[in-house]
Every structure is written in structure tokens, then in C-alpha cells.
Length: 470
Image 1: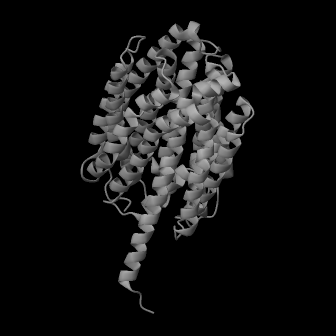
Image 2: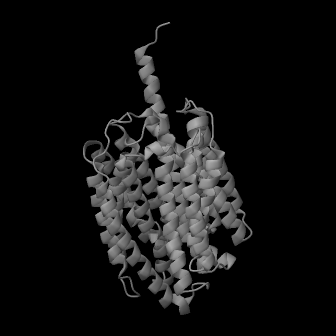
Image 3: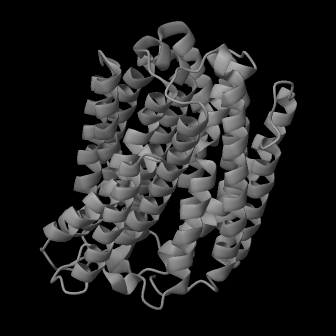
């Protein structure tokens, strides 16, 4: 039999289009929901009588579960097939959304948010690997830029949609909206996306390594969230010992969860991931803090707060495809480092928030933040994936995702720690507004200093390893 080159080319183009479509929609869905929920937090807090720290767990439970499971699911996807894990994750995400929509208490909601994080992790850990499997070097910056723009489009529409939904139909409608969107994604996956990708000939899965890694990360992140209690310090110390044991185990495991060759001598991979960790640690809690600030201090409705918060992700969505293309032709570290510097400038502006701060000042700071993050994210991800061998795309994608989610969790953990120290475990009411505002300023000061360190990490990565993984 002779194959038709033109038919093979058509199949390849169709596979690329379908894969990009699925990854783009999935990239939109989870940040859309997350940013919608941020605007609804005051309403959720009132319905369930949750204090400031408990309210923070609505976001943190999701992030904690996702951070724990990203690398294990990335490895599992490399073995079992990336499309299978992606589809299963989307189904779990939808189930959790339904549970949250009917949640009778804050405790049930937080537990279901953790389940939702697990489902989202299965899509996070596979979508980028799927793209890297079908797009060649020189095309990747463009498609990463497109999916990153979808993330920021979700972040852009989320606050406005969340404000409207909360105002007219209540916060539960945000989670019910996930169901038809997610079913649409599942339909495309099952009917349109042809092919399966598993890039390893080893069928072994490292269960001891998975247990060590997940429990160690759980103890570190949870311990950080309960500081300054003594138990927090103990959990962090035990978690760090667990990570050390995990690294030692991975050097002797027959089929390691995390192949340490990804890191050995790979300066670009290591420092790009460090830069991502710092960037997300410094920026993720911005929307959470500003949502509360705009509604509590400035007296805006959820809808009004959403309209202000949309300034940042709109700029991100506009710049991400451009930044992705730039990173295909120019050194990612330069583009990403400029982005990190702009992010630091935006955070520095927010240090000066007060009762009389004009809304226009907040919008300007958000636009500068959006410019910085838009220039940082796509080039940094492109640098990470270009520095990885194609056999490890699933794990490499999961590592950068873990840096993102761990950074986001640490960002929220920092805010929770500041709230616990400054405000205490009380609901945010007018008598506590001055302490709340003081907490916000402390948080943005710390985040500004973090970004300064992030610029150093971004520049330290050196030149990208071009073509190594084509």
C-alpha cells in the first residue's frame, strides 16, 4: 500500500486544529471560573458565615489539590495516554462543579473545591504536553501564546460574568455555568480529537514516589497556611524532609515519577521554573485582595468590582500571543524579564492603596500588571518546554504547572498568614476595615520584593536550548 502525502498532511492539520481548539477552550474554562469566584467571595462568606481565613480556603483548597497532583498526573499521562487523562479530568471537574453548586455548607464547598482542583490538574498536566506532541519547534511559541491568551480571556470575562451572575442569580450559578461549557469540551475531545499520545515505553508508575511527593507538598503548603502556629513550622519541616526523601528515592526508582535528568545541567529548565514560581507567588493573590478592597473599602457591587478587575486580564490576553511569537525568534529570558520588571512596577503602585485612592489609579496599576504578566508567561513556558526532551513533555508540562499552582497557593498562603496576624479569625466588617487595608499594603509590599528576586531568576536562565526537543 502507498500512502497519500496530501491526505497525511490534511490529517496532520486537522489533528493540530482539534488539539489546539480543545487546549484553548480548556485553558479558558478554569481561569474563567476562578476569577468569577473571586468576585463572589463576599457573597459566599455571608451565606456561610465564613471568616477571612476560612474564605481564603475557597481558593486555597483548589490550588493545594492541584499542586499536589500535577506531577503524578503528568507522569500518568505520559504512560497511559494524554487524551484519556485530559477527558477524565474534565469529567471530574464537571462533577465537582455540580457538588459545589448544591453545597449546603462552607465545609462541603471547600472539600468539593479540592476535588475540582484534582480534575483541573488532569487537564493542566496534559494540555500543554498534547500541544507539544503535535506542534513542532518554531510553531510552539504561537500556540502557547494562543492558549495563554485564552487563559487571560477567561480571567477577563470572569470578573464581569461573575459579578453579573452573583448579582442576578447568586454565586451558585457560577458553578452551574461550568457544566454546559465542560460538556461541550468533552464532546469535542471524544468526537473530534483523533489520536492518543503516550511518549514512554515504560508501563511502570512510581507509587512510592507519588506518595512521598504529594504528602510532602501537602505538609509544606498546608503548614505555611497555618503559620504562625507552631504546628505550621513543624509541618513545613517534615514536608521538606519528605521532599529530600523523595529526591533520594527518585535516584534509585526503576520508573521515577520525576526524572531528575530534566534538571541536571539544564539551567534554562531550572531557572525558568524558579522564575514561574516567583512570578505566580507574587501575583496570584492580587485579584483576591483587590476584589475584597473594591467591595469593602470602595463600596462597589460585585458587578462593579468585576468591571474594574477586567483591566488586567484584557491586557494579558492582548499581549500573550505577541509575546509567544517574540519568544519563537528572540531569547525568551529577555522578553520574560521585561515582563517581570513591569509586574514589579504594577505591584509597587498597589502598595499605596488607601481609602481615597481613585479607581483610575487601580485600573492603571492593573494594566501595568497585565502588560508585565502578558510578556512573561508565554515566553517563560516556551523556554521550559523547549528545554525538555519530548519523552518528558507530560512531566515537564506538569513541573511548570506545579510551579504555577504552588506559587498561587503560596501567594494565597501569604495573604492568609497576614490576615491571621493582622486581622485575626473574624469576618471582615467595617470595624476591621483599617486592619484589612493595612494587611493589603503589607501583602503588596512583600509581592513587590518577590518580583525583584524574580527578575534575577529570569535573567539567570541563560540562553534557551533551541531545537533540543523538536
